[in-house]
Image (tube, rainbow, N blue to C red):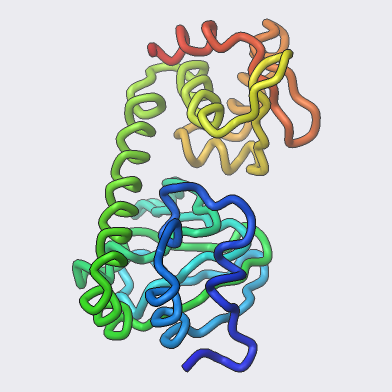
Amino acid sequence: MGSPHSLDLRTACQKGSLESNSFFYNLSPGALRALDGIKFASSYPKGAVLFGEQEAPKGVFILCKGRVKLSMTSSEGKSVILRIADPGEVLGLHAVVSNQPYQASAETLEPCELNFVRCDDFLRFLRENPEASLHAAQQLSQNYHIACEQVRSIGLAHSAMGKLAGFLLLRATKGQPTKQGTRVLLTLTHEEIGQMIGLSRETVTRTLGDFKRRQFVASKGATVVIQNKGALEQFAGM
């Protein structure tokens, strides 16, 4: 049923090292073939809106390449970034499974490749493939865990330093250990980081500069090295 230029789920969404919490991790070839038969693949440019907050669900989007920003906007127009989705995630899963409006807006941060599956097709796929239902439940659980960790390390912090320290420590869980410290790739702008932790762009820039002067972190381009994890943990109250 896929488009003539469809992305093979077994290649586009399994190449590389997807994490164990990816929807596709250890999914059987039979289930992948079934999903491959009901999805439609598309490429999206940077800044494309996949779905909007409070829209009725039309289906799920399977992220195969690129990154997608999930955000919410207040009645005053203030935007808060909930998280950044990585390849292997199914976007809009909660809305489709619960038949509720999308809780957030989804916007591509860079050129992305995604597979779309309509609501009825995806729900039937889950009913007919129990292992896929388990994977969906695991992703929903992981999303909840991420939200709790974000509230614990960022939302409960009272100072700008505490909020930014919590943000960096969360990113460090997926960082690369080196002799100098934990290397983290931050591809978000200071404004986007601010939207995730409730600070202005100027405050993020100033606070990160303070961390550098204190030699808590070092940075070059999008790469940040956490040199003093203990100091950041003290600011974050961890």
